[in-house]
Length: 97
Image (cartoon, rainbow, N blue to C red; front, side, top):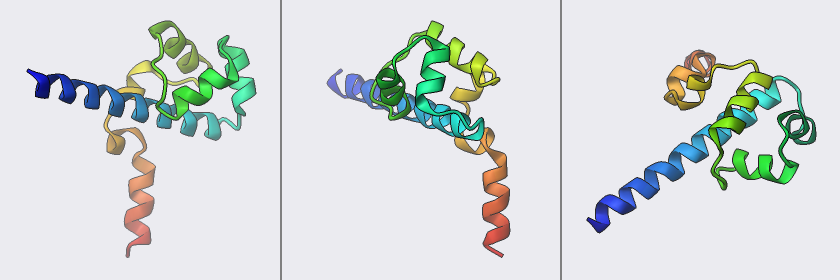
């Protein structure tokens, strides 16, 4: 049982980290700073920073609000990396030639 609990905690931490990373990348693509996005989402800049760094859990309400502002479907945040930003892999493949 203890191993299963540890696995669950590790998986949750990885999900938080990946979701935060995607939010940060989307925010950057929209050329929004953390203060602006946080204000529009109704959360503090500190909380947004923690979310983007995978250090905070986020409610569905706040996650939905962020996705709305970033004009991104909620499910995008939970896709595998290669499904999320396919252009990165194309550029990497071309650069490797």
